[in-house]
Image 1 (cartoon, rainbow, N blue to C red):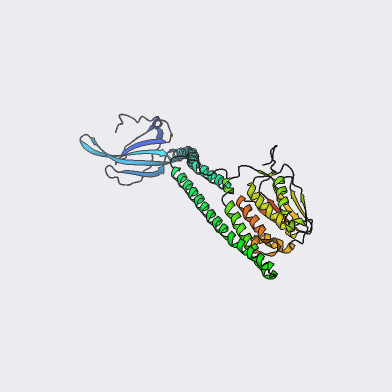
Image 2: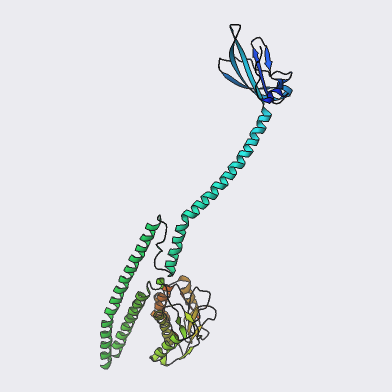
Length: 398
């Protein structure tokens, strides 16, 4: 048996290279590669069908463990068919090293590919969600009053959502305006009966029915204050969300309110101290701030023994009205603040005026704080969440 053309792989010619071949027949005649040197790959005595390939692990030269692939081939010798077994073997150790090296290279490639895909996904998601982030900021600006509608310059994918949100805002504002109008109509409709009730009380007083007249006047006054409260709530509802264009100078407004309250029987008997700085401005509508301060100063004058003081903090928007009256018991006052009870539901000396103040402040997301005054009475403080103090520009006060 002669091999006319050896395999082209040079490792078959290198002794103990790890790559081997051998050819044998049933009589044991062998041809083998130079790489086997003087060794033979021991093959199991299995029966091979024509064209079938078997794989085995066997012992190779130098004690190497090799993987053998063998196949039966029928040749023609001198006109007679001869079946031979072709076997090719490779060192399992080198195969394992090659597999480990390939797995290492593949792992590095997969890690790099995973990082690239993760970065691409992050960029794609970030770019894809950027319009929604802009919408979230726009909704926050609407809620705080910086803008009235979402901007229409958005990608096509979210443009229908922007249109629906703006339409919803318009519908809500329209409904709020209708509600405000109905509340105002109802309140104004009650003014005339209340005026007639006051006139009846005056006539009863002239006839000497002082007790009945006093009861009717008390009922009329309570109803009137409820009407005033509803008017105030209807006026400020939705205004703060639309933003405040300008700030209002506080000290002149406090002075005008003091001048008005001083003409009432309660205000005529007390001394007012306006200690607000000349340059203090608050970012509130002038009419709403007048509603707040008017109720606070009127309430303080009603319960003061002889003095009402209006002060402002030097570092942040904070305004306080306090009196030297009996005030509210600290335990009860603390209970009200902790539970967040509405001021008009807790009774006592605070009265409905403070409830109106709370309603107006709620519209601007400000807060009303009640505490014990150094003068001995109640200290009512209005404060915003801003950390800085607003100052008025030079020139005439607004």
